[in-house]
Image 1 (tube, rainbow, N blue to C red):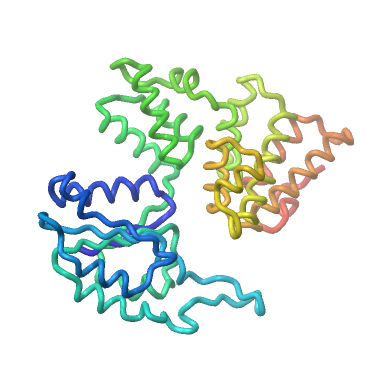
Image 2 (cartoon, helix red, strand yellow):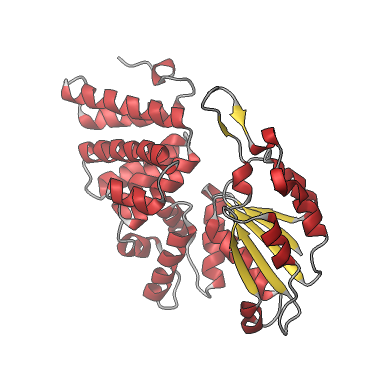
Length: 343
């Protein structure tokens, strides 16, 4: 009755917590016996006290702790940039006794630790893993995401064609909160029939902007077939090569800025500073977490080169963009010239 749920997919973590609650009896009674604690300011004594409190007129008491494990993640040393340091360097502090606290808690207490992305080297995670029912929730991509869409639609008593599921996966990506909302709208729109590809095109209001996000994903993940398919879809929707180039450049710049701001600002503050809509903020935050900084800088630099090629007349905008996508997708080194010779 001790769980650790962590990963970037907070939608699935939310669902998993709901399943745990469903298994603990009456929802109304459990609500009175559920406590949520902020791991950032929690002390071991507070946790021990709450884990040893008996439930009120119920078989179980649920204690949920959010954000405790992340404080034991490695971080860069300011004095020695090449060296990673963790709280384990100075010991776990009072939390070295957490294992004992968990083992000695009241048998009626169900303890759940919830966190974002963690490394396997996290010392507190390594210490507690043998005791816990451990579940890791990574962002869904490609076939796993398409499968999730089909299963979620089925769970909602609906149906969706494979083509529609693939398009929805490309447009929305791994943000399952946004995906769930779009599926709800599509199910209402389809009115009992299968959701089709054209339904997705008509109803997903930010389809063209979402295509830019999907194109950036495909480029950074080196998936040339998907990238060119999305690029041609943008052409079919009336987007010009210049527009696509500007939007890709803008998105990569936003990812870099978000990466830099995330260490000191909240998502709401980042949204205000960068002037992003809620959907664009969520997607940019996901991309900032998912991609290596050097990979993003490399792609951004090559985009600027393509812009120069167009403005100097070396290539027309469409050829320059096609070459750019190919170079970025196939590049393995620090510069795309190592892969595709440019004439």
